[in-house]
Amino acid sequence: MRSYWLRCIGCGREYPGSSRIYTCPACGDLLDVVYEHGDEVSRIPWLRGYGSRPLGVWRYRELLPVEDYGKVVSMGEGGTRLIRCRNLERELGVGEIYVKYEGDNPTGSFKDRGMTVGVTKAVEAGARTTICASTGNTSSSLAAYSARAGLECVVLVPAGKIALGKLSQAIIHGARVLAVRGSFDDCLRIVRILTRDKRFYLLNSINPFRLEGQKTAAYEIYEQLSGAVPDKLIIPVGNAGNIVAYWKGFGELRSLGLIDELPSFVGVQAAGAAPIYKAYVEGADGIKPIKDVETVATAIRIGNPVNWKRALKAIRETGGLAAAVSDAEILEAQRLLASREGIFAEPAGAAPIAFLIKASREGLVEGDERVVCIATGHGLKDPGIVVKTFEKPPEVDASPDSVLQALEISAKAV
Ligand code: AN7
Image (cartoon, rainbow, N blue to C red):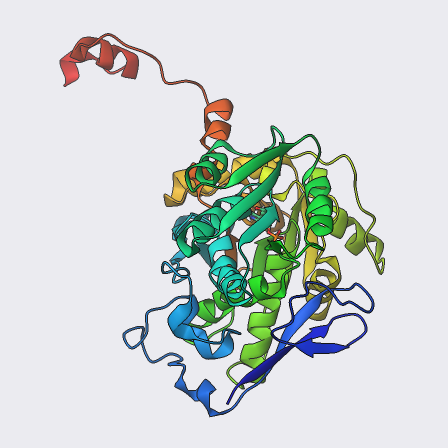
């Protein structure tokens, strides 16, 4: 029989898995879910094709902390495509490039992997109202999963700083959306205070159950590469929950004896919101929160990431690195991915490609390397940025001639 409990990542104190706490009551640090597994782990059909259980979060139910699989709040999250990008390989001179396209998830981002577990835990805990701070995608996902579970949902977003697609999702799923005059970090600070009150169930990535769902993306990559591990895993970093989740996922594959080594983790931040990158470059033990953050990749416009400690550990222990990319580099990468590979990622989701472009130019990636880039969110989340960046389509009269004229093709040649 599998059992699980919570362990503080700072002082190591342990608490029952059913405790409704988000951080360590003794020292305030974050909590990790730890397991003692029995035989049930052998029921996971690793590499035996996807038929017996579809690829996705709940394929790995034995490695997830829920009491009753029959009661999970799910709509088929995970099982996202791992897309080989041969055009980019040629263009950048990199051995193998894959994009794990998390835009395939039910609400269009990787957040759904965490929410299916997190909202299931909220229901288990008897919660009535869920709450989160969000740069956008967390709110879309939480609103949708709360709706499905019949829970009230409250989301705090930084006013004017969330992409239109994400805002429209939170609204249509019935969340009570409040636009806070402040940053994401302000929103999260408020949510942490409000959730001392048991009326609200917190679903930011402080919540250890969220990361449990997100770690399944690492299992999927292992399966999709037929049991291999990439040399580099390149991932955007905001609040730094997702990079920690992948680290845990690959770490568990190693504990289970399925792999020998973890990929090198490359955490990519936007240059205007890069506290982890700065700490990495300075070789510091901790981060210095940044107050005035700004980036076109609003998803990762975060100056005080809560999961920084394990993020730095993941990067250092796997021989990886932290990187920062400019807004111009992010937009160039977004365009390149879309125009060369047909993959439309939102700006934050294109940040790994921005790093890869730069790294290949600077010789930081070898010609025979296999890299996996995590495209964390769908491009349609933020259509505004494309319309803003590109010229408006020219308007023409409703005649074949004016179309040809606009296309600058001679009418005779057709
Ligand atoms: C597309 O929605 O923080 O490093 O509130 O939406 O785990 O925070 C979003 C984060 C990367 C960063 N890519 O992940 C939110 C939020 C996309 C994102 C990240 C986010 P973390």
